[in-house]
Amino acid sequence: MADVSSRRYVTVPVTTLWSSPTSPRDVDAAAVAPHPDVVAWLADLDAAAARLGLHGRTLTQLELGEPVDIIDDPDNIDDPDNIDGPNNGWFQVVAPMQPSTLDPRGYRGWLPAAHVSAQAPDRTQISANSDSLDGGRSAEAFIAAARKRLGLAYLWGGMCDWALDCSGLVHLCLRRLGVVFPRDADDQYDACEHISATDARPGDLYFFAHEGKRPHHVGIVTGPGRMLHAPETGSVVVEEALTPARRNSLVGAGRVPGLERGAGLSE
Image (cartoon, rainbow, N blue to C red; front, side, top):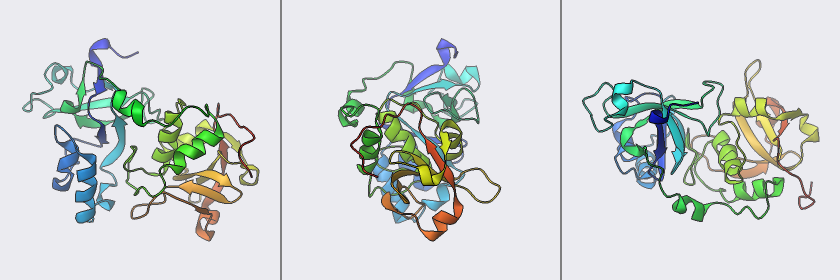
C-alpha cells in the first residue's frame, strides 16, 4: 500500500504520462503547460504532422481525480513547484487504476507536478460526461460506450474522450462502466478468459500479434468477423469487418471477466 504522503490526484481534465521528463517536444507544449489544453495540443500535433513522433514518448493518459502514487525522490514530493529540484518539476508516478505487468503498483511514467495535488478534486466535470450505467456492466453498454467514440482520431498513448489508442479505447470504455481492466493490449489479453475467434460474441475482444510476439492490437467484437477499434496513427476509431491483414495476425479472442451479457445484442 502506498505511503499516504506519496498519494496525489490529477487536478486537470487530462494529463499525459510520459516516458521521461525530457520526452515532450516543443510541439507538446500545450500538453505539459500548468493548465494543459488537450484540444490545442492535438491541433498542434496535426498541424506539424507530429502524432507519429509520440511513439516511445507518451505512455498513457490520466483523468481528473485519478489517483497516482509518487515513486521518485522524496525530496521532490515536498516541493512540487521547485523547478530547480532533482526532477525539474516532474514526478515519477504509478497509476493504480491502470493495471500493468510493467509494475505491480500500476502504470508507471512521468507527469508535470503541477497537474496533481494531495487534495482530491471535485470530479463533477467527468461524472457529467460519463457514459450511463443504466445498462450495468453489460456487453451492450460496453459496445454503446465504444460507439460514442467513433470518429475520434488515434493517438499513441491516448486514453481520454478526445483521442485514443486501441487499448485505451477498451480500457476507457470499461472504466466508464466501473470495470477495472489493464491498460495495454498484451495485459488485456492475459486478463481475459481465452476463447477461439470463432466463438467470439459481441462485447468480447479480438487480439492481434505478429508471429512469436505478444498481442500488440485489440478490438471490440461487434459481430462475427467485425470489430470496433482504433487502428493506428493517421486513422480514426472505426467499426469494420476484419481485413485480410487483420485476419492474418488474429491470435484469438478474449472474454472480459465480470461483463454481463443480455439478450439485447444480435450476433
